Amino acid sequence: MEKIIITATAESIEQVKELLEAGVDRIYVGEENFGLRLPHNFTYDELREIAGLVHEAGKEIVIACNALMHQDMMVAVRPYLDFLKEIKVDYLVSGDAGIYYINQHEGYHFKIIYDVSVFVTSSRQANFWGDHGASEIVLAREIPSAELFKMSENLRYPAEILMYGATVIHHSKRPLLQNYYNFTHIDDEKTRERGLFLAEPADPESHYSIFEDKHGTHIFDTDDIDMMPKLPELLEHGFTHWKLDGIYCPGHNFVEIAKIFVQAKKLVEAGELTQDKAFLLDESIRQWHPKGRSLGTGFYDFDPSEVK
Image 1 (spheres, rainbow, N blue to C red):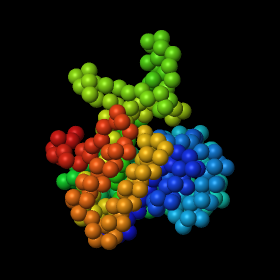
Image 2: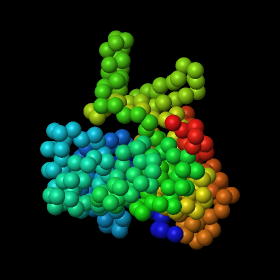
Image 3: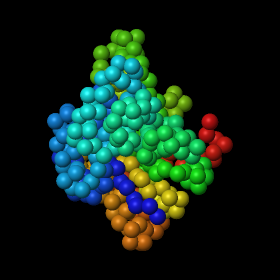
């Protein structure tokens, strides 16, 4: 089995320290111009400090460069890449072919993790981007287990699974919330902290978190992801790169959840992880998960024929 890699987002320098102490392998951060859906947008000085802390701990820093890159952003990204090279970033996360071109042809040579959130749904797709400069691939969250396991037979590059956290289902560059406010003559906040959500008329239990920022409008699934109950199956099929996303799980609670996944990793390495132990760890996760936000396994148990 390949080495298990746990990547965790961070919302503050203090949380970075706590996550490193907890035992995660990679810290995932970024800033406001080129990073999407981050728990916090750090300044350049803060990113430099975080890189130092991460490398001092013998871990890796991953920088989100996953914005939808229009032409003006492609022009502006080079000074940012210069800065990231200066602080010795270990990985970039990007799904833009322009970033791959600049990286290969202008001497940056970052290791890049290919991430377009919902689009990588086949091994052929994953291998294509690996062959064209990606070191690792982030798989879509909407893949049923039957297809996921079939993919694993042909993947030639490490594939990351969202193991915990909110999962985005829609992103529009348009200011959809502001347009709605303009139409209804409402004056309200649009930020993630405001806690806005959508509900389907036929399903009052649905709870699609929504916020708007400079990159447009972001909508998340009703259930946050928690794949701990499926961990033995995922490991059996070689999925050892785990992402923990704390965008809707702030502060100490997220660190405690990260500790539970580190505990699972240690059990795997000792050959002691069982399905019963995975269920017990899952119960611990639910104790720290934010109240009012539901947890599920996404499309994992769906029949592939039901997914359109």
